[in-house]
Length: 82
Image (tube, rainbow, N blue to C red):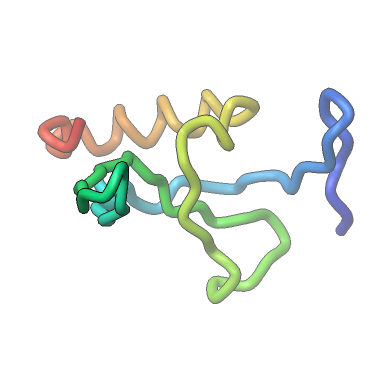
């Protein structure tokens, strides 16, 4: 399977949102180390092996809003994660 073109970009089709987490990382900004946190979703891609799942930020899932909404409905107990 090849990616499809959406809005001029090639995109693989998502099969399922497996989980989500707040990912923390540190970065130096203006000489100081700051901690940043980002919401990320662990995505299972259609026609890909499990070891090809990947962490993706919400903006990479704009064309998979239904999958994200379904994940949140099925995992309402995770609402404390942002």
